[in-house]
Length: 397
Image (cartoon, rainbow, N blue to C red; front, side, top):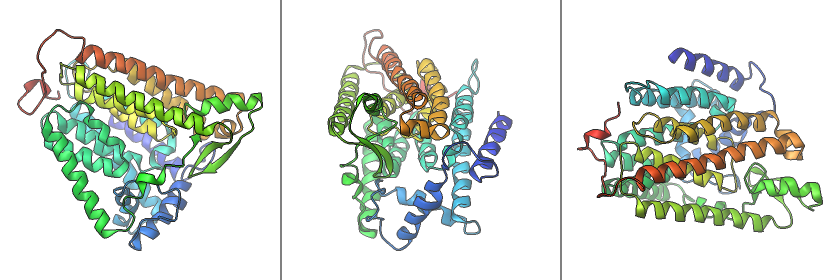
């Protein structure tokens, strides 16, 4: 296991440090240009409010500033090393959580293979750091709901989506700890750096990104005379033109529908076994990823990690969705960065890869929702059975 992880990550680092050239556009420019630019601004005592690409909650500043911990390296090299350490932290958590009879190390193998399939993008975004926090939160949730809530709240300040980890939390202590942590750290950011809450409106004018589910509408429409363009807009490659606002609003409506389904599931759920917390978190993040106006490649990092956590618990029904996400990871590295030019230009190869990747994510959503409903709602009638620190079934074996 460790040998496979070490070999695969050594190859990724060779691509990240450009010893070998990975096909497609250079994915490390986000670190060497955008992140490093933010780093300089943040060191000056403010958020980069004049940069439209800054659309993140205040905790993101910690990830951007983290290379200062390694002053003997330049910014890009330090960031790559810290991303590697976060990757290793995820593996160690999964190895600890994967000690179980019958199917040892299944979750760790999913992470080792799935994250490697994404190529050097894994280390060229700060998402792997957020993912490490999220994985720690889910494993803590089995026995330490307050710790789980605190980690989820901290993760939400890094990149919002870890708040979805609370979807299956049945103990009020988790929710209270998350709220207290997010409020305390958010207030501290607000007092120390101007513009801490700018992220709340930063994405208001975002359009439909070329890799998203909604973007497929325009990928097809421009072959039938749609009068629009593809532009670098708000930090991503988006469609700009007629009806883009309609499709963007439809994406938001789908996200709202996903939220309504989760709310209905939560109201109907009665059986919360050891796997329910991880399964619900994976399902929630899947739904909000697939319906997003932006499905960036790094989003798949979250999905691979959460799928891996699910497979560390007895009774998880997420085997099939996890397999679909693994295949989606392989297709993702093909659509970005390998054939991203074909995606942007709307060539049949690029459009076909997008249909395949997004179709896999939609299929994963459907199968995950079905499995979660069956395991928590459709089981034998009975009282709610929450998992907490006194529930021996919650032990991660």
